[in-house]
Image (cartoon, rainbow, N blue to C red):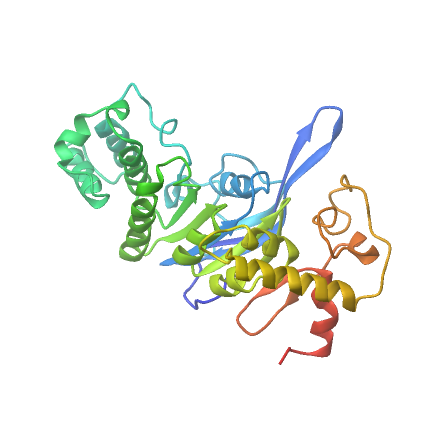
Length: 340
């Protein structure tokens, strides 16, 4: 459950599961029982390394891949098969070079969704396209509308992609690594633009990234994903500055500008060593290729793994803020009551 807001949910995701069939092998579970909500005017970050399943979540929500199980409700109703859902849930792709057709002008890219979604008529479509370009700070709008994608910079192309996503007047915006293909110098500008549009248009924003620093600064809440599962979630400061799952600690200790300073890295190592010394020695699972539905997914890489990690860990609440982690390390402390 997303924390930090009491506004009604724009999008509710319940037990989302995505399996991919493989010839001659068991199905690959890319997303495993993921649940969260998106709220108007609120940003939720989905964080994890490459291959964790983040983009598959986004593609399932945008109907580019079919979920194997679970429910997705828009404003409380299961309407994922409706055209209204596709208009209300829009996606900003990672690569602005590939997401725009080089054969068409910018104006064409904007006029088409405006007309298809009934947001403009042929008599006023050019004026509405110009307003979209103004909204993403692309001026003069008339010159930009006549340009083709190859005539624009990477940052300008991504602004066009954002404007196109805004054309159907969506309620939910799915931003899949929207700045990872851009120069460092303009990444903050694009993220600032998304943040402003979210506030002005009351968009529910899912921000997918591997960058903990930007997740902390641009999202109120964070979910950390590893091998298809959410392993930790909560308010961004709690999760990123005080990570409790060993995987999140690993990400944070390697992230400059978030919790990645040398001091925080030393603190994380000291905490892991103290926890290891305080626990009796137990045999450790050694296989790095455990079946996907058995045990903790992180245990082949975890320095604190024990034999009970061969069982699927529960989700443990870590305090009143909504911070929680899927880890056996916190089960005993949770049974003893909240920490002082």
